[in-house]
Image (tube, rainbow over the protein chains, first blue to last red):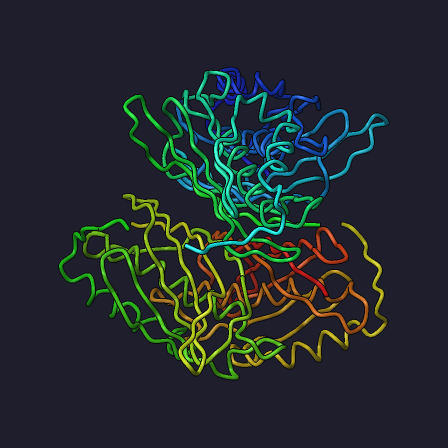
Length: 144
Length: 144
Length: 144
Length: 144
C-alpha cells in the first residue's frame, strides 16, 4: 500500500468542513468516519428512503458515498484551498447493496497535480458484522 | 434513431409501479415524466438537499436519476414480470449540474435477452428554460 | 450535431503527420480516411493477424483504432503544437467485430482547454457493404 | 487475496491453446507467461511497431494484452468447453507505457456463472528491471 505525504497540515479539518457543506450527504444520512492521507471512509446507514424497487440500496446512493470518499481522498493530498471535481467514474456492482450500513472507502491510486485516479469500494455490513463487497469504483478527479 | 417494439403491453404501467417502489426516487424528489419503448425520462427538481460542497447537484444524485432512467428504458423492452439490474455504469461529468431542475433520459442502445447497453444523458434546466448537458452515462443492464 | 471551429489552420495535415508516426497504426494496417473539425475516421481492413480465438477482430485492435480516432478528433480542435493524451476510456462491445473492414469514428462531445470528452463508435462492414455497430467508446483526452 | 478453485483440470492447457489461436497476440509479439486459477499474466516486448506518436506503447496495444489477461483469468474458473467474451472494459492510463517490456496481469475479482468482473494492471519494465504501473483495467466478462 502506497504511503502518501500530505501538503496540507489541516487536511482532515478541511475535508470535514467540506463534507459538512454537502447537503446531499446529510440528506442521505451519511457520516464521514475516517480521514487519512490518500484515504477516506464514509458510512451510510441503510434505510427505506435509500431503496430501489427490490428493497436494496439504490445504485445512486451507493455511488454517491463512494464518489464523495474518492473526492475527499484526493483532497487530503492537495495543497490548502484546493478544490476537487469528479471528471468521470465507473462503478461495477458486484452484489446487492444491503445490510444495516454500507461502508465506502476511497483511495488515491495515482496522485497528480491536476488529474488524480482513485479507487473506491463499498461493503454492505449485516447485523452480525459480516461484510460483503457490493461495488467498486474507479474515478478520475480533477484538482484545481 | 432506432424504433423498438415492446413485448409487454403494460410496459408503461409496470415502469410506473416499479418507480413508485424506489424509495430513493421519492427521497430525492424525482418524478417519472415520460415512458416509451426503449426510452424513459426522469426529472429532478434541484434543491439544497441534493448539493455537493460548491452548491451544485451532487454527482451521486445526478447519477441516481439517470441510472433509474436507463434501467427503466431497458424494462420497457422486456417481457412481463422481468427484472432489471445494473451491472455497471460509467458517467462523464461535462458541466456543473445546476438550474431549477435536471432532466435525465435513458435510452436502450443495444437490447439483448440478458445483457442490454443503454446510454443516458442529463441536462440542467435554468429559470429561462435553457438547457445544458451536464452528464452522460453508458450502462450495462442485466435482465432476468 | 455540434459544429466546431478549429484554431489550427493546418489541423488536417498535423493529424495526418501524427498518425503517420504511430507505428502501431501501420502495424495494424489502419488508414486515416477522414479528418474534419472535431471528427476523425479510421478504417481497419480485417485480417487473421487481428483475430481473437473465435476469429473475430480482437477487442484490443478495435479499441486501438477508435482510441486513435478520438485522440485525433480532439487534436483537430486544439491550437497548433498541442499534444493529446488519453487519460481513460471505456468501451462496450455490442456485437462481434467482423467483416471486410472496420470503420472507427471519434467525435468530440465536450471540448475543453485541458480535458476533452469524446465518443467513438466502430462498425463492421461486410462484403455487401452492410454495416453493423460493434463497439462504442467514451474517452477522456487530456490536451497540453 | 481470494483463492479460487477451478472446475476444469485442464484449465492451463485450455488457456494456452486458446491464446495460441489469437492471431493478434502473435502479431503483437505477446507471450502468455503465467496461468493460475483466477489469474493470468501476459508479457509484451516493446517495439517500434507498437508505438503511438510520441514513441510510447499505443493505448490499444496495452489494452489488448490486459484484456486477454482478464478474459483468460476468467476462463481458468469456468467449466470445460466454456467461452469467454468481453462485454465492456474501462482503462485508466496512469503513466506512459514504456520500457523493454510490459507485464499485464488479469485477476478475477467477482466470479459468476455468466457475468464475471476482473481487474487488470499493466506495468512497464525498464532495462534495470524497475517496474512502473502504467494502466489499470476493470472488465466485465461474459461466460457461456
